[in-house]
Length: 198
Image 1 (tube, one colour):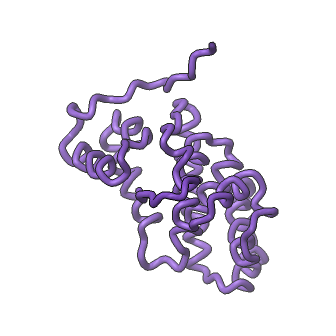
Image 2 (cartoon, one colour):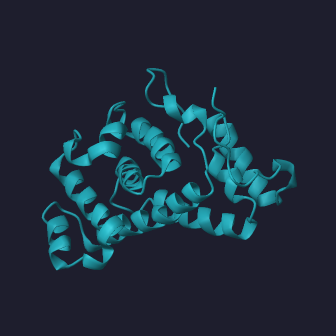
C-alpha cells in the first residue's frame, strides 16, 4: 500500500499558538466538529494567518455583498479547480453543497461549470471569474457589459474579482505546501442529515 502524501510543513501545536489564533481555531472546531487543515497550516506564521483570515472574512462573510454565500463558494470551487488546488476544491465544494443544498453542484462546477445546472446569471459570473483567474490582463469593458446584462453591478464585479484573486493566493499556498483536505470535507453536504456550516 502506498503511503498517503504528507504536508510539507508540520502543523504547529494548537497550545503553542497566540491566544487570539487559538481561540478562533477552537471556535471553528466547535462549530464544524473538526479543525480544517488550513487553519493550522497557516498558523505557523501568526501575522500572515491574521492577515489571511481578515481578508477571507471581509470577502466571504460580507453582508453588504450582492453575491450569495453559495455564489461566493461557487466562484472559489470553480476557479480553484482551474488552478488545480485539491484542498480548496474539496473544502469549498463541501461548503457549496451545503449552502446550495445540491449534492451534485460542486462536482459539476469544479469539472465544467459551463455544463453545471446553474442559471445564465451564475454562468456569466463564473465566466468573469475564470477570465480574472486565467487572463486578468485581458479584462475589458465587454466583460463588465456581460455582467451588467445579468444584473451585476461594478461593485459585484469587484467582489467576483477579489474572491477569485484571493483564492488564487490560497490555491498556490495550499498546493506548494501540500495542504491536504480533511477527510470530513469529502462527505459534507452529500449525506441527507443536517450539516454544520463553517
